[in-house]
Image (cartoon, rainbow, N blue to C red; front, side):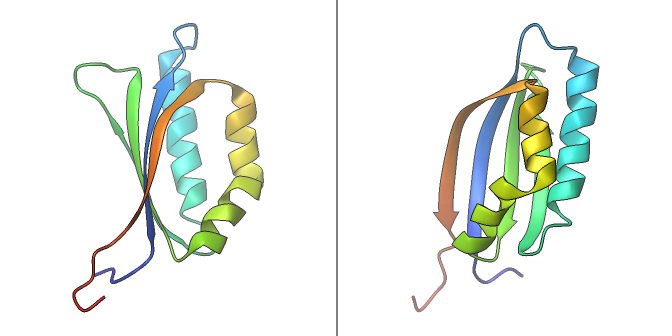
Length: 100
């Protein structure tokens, strides 16, 4: 079980003028690439059942430095440049560990 790290929950919305199947494919590719990053051990995207244009990402990084490197990664920049989504909100969380 993951004892520590930086956990990210982010809500993204596929833009109304974007092709949804293309955006979904890009999200899958992006999550796979994130999991290849040093310091990232989890990148999962969930599609809202009620609103297919809404996605929730769960990500886990070893530390703040790994999370910062994520934004400099080529696949992150490529995903952003596609312009298929907007970031609605994001939360940075630390796991509550007994004794801390």
